[in-house]
Structures are given as C-alpha cells and as structure tokens.
Image (tube, rainbow, N blue to C red; front, top):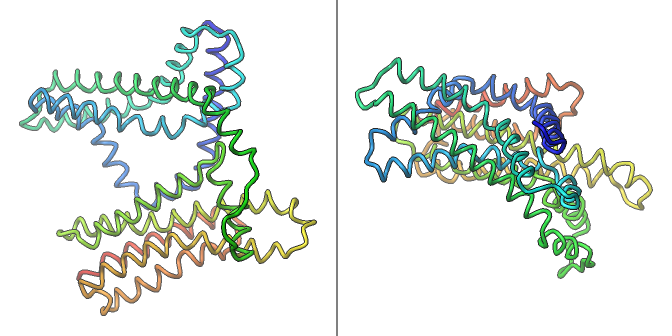
Length: 360
C-alpha cells in the first residue's frame, strides 16, 4: 500500500466491517433461516442487468448500466460511517496528507467494499452463460459486467471522498454550533412523551447514529410490501410478498427493540439519581418500538378489508398474530440470543404461512 495513511485506512475499514458483521450476526441468521431461497435467487441474478443491457439499444443500455452501478453503490453509502468515522475525518483533515494519497486510500477502501461483488458477479454470470438465453450476447455481456463493476468502484470512491469533504467542511462546524444553542420546546408535552422524545428519539438521529434512518428504511419497505401484497394479482407474488411483509414487520420490531434496550443500558446508571421512576419510562420506550409494526398491520387491515379477507378464519388468525408478534418481542427479556433468533424466525414463518392462506 505504500503510505502509512493508506495502511491506516485499510485497517480502520477492516475493523469497522468486523464490528458491523458482529452487530448484524443475529439478523443475518434470521434472514438466512427465513429467506435463504430469496437471497440465493437475488445473488444468482446480480449480473443479469449488465448482461441484459447488451441486448438493448445503446441509450437504454447505458441507462441500465448506470442504474445498476448506482444501485450496487448503496451498501457503500450505508457503510461509509463505519469505514470512515467522523472523528477520523476531522483528525486527518488537520494532517498534511496529499490529495493523491487521500484518493488512493479511498480507492483501497472502496475496493474492499466492492471486491465481494466481483465473486458474486462471476458466479451469476456463469449461471446465466450456462443457461444461454436467446437474447444473450456472451462476450459483450461479460464486458458490460466488468464495466458495471468498475463504475460501482468509482461511485464508491466518490461516496468516500464526499464523506471526507462534508464532515471536515464548514457544514460540520455549523451543525455543532446549532447543537450548542439551547433548546426551548415550543409546546407543552406530557412528561413521559417529552422524556422519550429527548432521551430516545433525538439520539437516534444525531451524530453517527443510524438507527433513525435504519428504522425509516425498514418501515418504508414494510409499508410498500404490505401495499403491494394486498394488490398483487398472482398467487406466487402474493406468497412472496406475504413473506416480505411478515419478515419486515418482525425485523422492524426486533431492530427497534434492540436499539431501545441498548439505549436503556446507557441511560440506566445516569438516571439512577434522577427524581423520577425510570422503569416506567423505559417500559414506555419499549412499547413505542412495537408501534411501527402495528402501523404496517393497520395498513394491511385497511387494504385487505376491500377484498373481504378478514371475514375468513385465516384473516382473523393473521390479525391476532400480527398484533401479538411485536408485543411479544418487546415484552420478552433477552436472556439468550439464540432464543431471540428462534422467536423471530418462528414469528416470520407463522405470519408467512397464515398470510399465504388469506386468498384461498
């Protein structure tokens, strides 16, 4: 690697990825147990867009290649705070690091993040070449796949470079100056709601905390899958969307409840000397982590009422399970991580099995 800063960035990114893998261990087990077939199918089709692009007119092919490269850069954008923390950016901004060394470090870290795609594309391309569809142009498709991979690598470098500029630039100073100003609530809120807002809601959106964005993405995906599920025309799509909706509802509650439990562990010693009953506030916060999944269930109920599915036994059972699943997750103490994973998997399988019977 040559320069010490490049080596430092490489080890920093590797450490961040290891921490991320450890934090997602339980969720990865859930996804593999509940949706292994879907994940394998998506992996097998990862090289399909660039190979299919070669059968399209030039303008459409260029647009599809660009869209595919940008879509494959999304994981890099989500991991940018892990591989390049804000404190490291501000520290490195004060050092005499040449721009070319900074670019080389970004390229090495981007290569670490994009590298696994090369193996994934190779496997997917081999499967597609073995099937050899009539529309396929093998040589041009392989070139397009390599081009899409290189374009994704360039987009990843741009994401990391933009991360360095935005954190180290004036926007960071203005943000900290704005946070230093005192906060005066514009309206009087109930005490429990105000404390929940200050101690649980705001920390999930500040600094490097990504819980707020994570839950927003999961909630949006769950609402979209619920809406599509209730409108899907074919039985196969309904079964697939039932799996997606049930899994996202359970994962939404699971990740939210874990974030609340971690925040409670941080606040418990601090609030021990406060003149209030912290146990009630903590129970209130954990109950709030079940509300997003219940919101998704409400959308399912409203859209499903137009099809008359709730008058059937399967529909009534689904509503009961949909209400009980998030409440059970937030009420169950985490004594064993394996038990938690098993509970989540069982809930996903039950919701999927019952949801698949709604239209029969």
